[in-house]
Length: 269
Image (cartoon, rainbow, N blue to C red; front, top):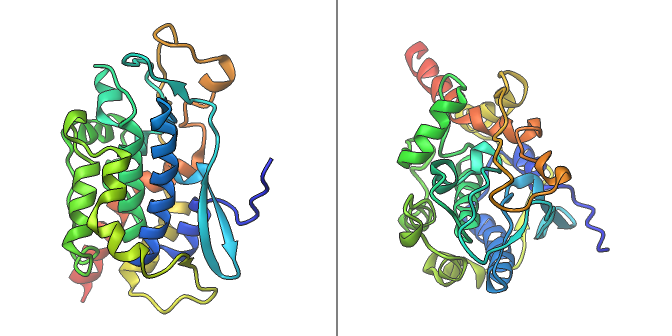
């Protein structure tokens, strides 16, 4: 078994808050390459999230990502119906229970790309209510808010929009992501994503939300639970229906706290 000593992507996000487009492109390139390989063999991972992406370090740089934890992976021969996954990253067709396939992994990768570029997730409930979060996911209700997205390229936003398409038939597949000009424009420039030991000073709205969200919010109480009679998921895998991992839930409340902090500061100034 391969040993990866750099920890996971969640810890890297918590340490860096957010990443440059060139850094994010390397990580998303590695992730979607892994997904493209799985999908070419008709395997869906069903649990793509930062905690399941191990970071391989090269000094102070993220050399690459390794996808791990295949406890919920499934060969797709027909639409799947088991409701499973982590709330922040779950695709709308899982929640709608209309049947899903390989592209739920691309949705989760789109959520991760959004987080890498701004430091908080695209879908969140201001009141930390799971039902409201799911409603926003089902409707595809998210935006690229100022000031967090002011300096992000239109090409990156376009790619995210194609990955977070609520209709699976219109959503990008993994190969489409790899072929997108945004990835190509950066992957030729570097092969590692830097994580500086002493990152440059950030504005308060870039720095504070992650720290506050990690230490000051209420976790969602109810896990996503599915009917395993629809497709085979053993007891061990079922126990991984993922609200169990508190660190995943951290990211679910970052957006609302970020925006609240921003407007509080503006009003005081």
